[in-house]
Image (tube, rainbow, N blue to C red):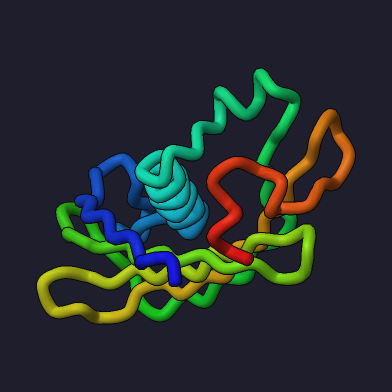
Length: 132
């Protein structure tokens, strides 16, 4: 089993909308940053893969907003990944507010690998073999 990844961040003022809460689209940035950090810690480098003609792309995002964050809130993003079929990798991600651990966001992000624009088996991407 691949261990979960955790990342702590703090809400910056400019990420909030007129209501004083984090804009819903900003959560997608938080989740993406956590996925990239997770993959880099596993020695999966997007830039290197791209030079080899391989890209990891988001196919679908399902997100449930539970509670809003506001400026200055500290929060933690937990990410794990698993394979679904031969072509998909699933990132299960959660954001909780710190220190009270109140749920903020729960997301399922489906990604696929493509080589030169064509779908490829996830297990053929270096670093993803453990998902088999």
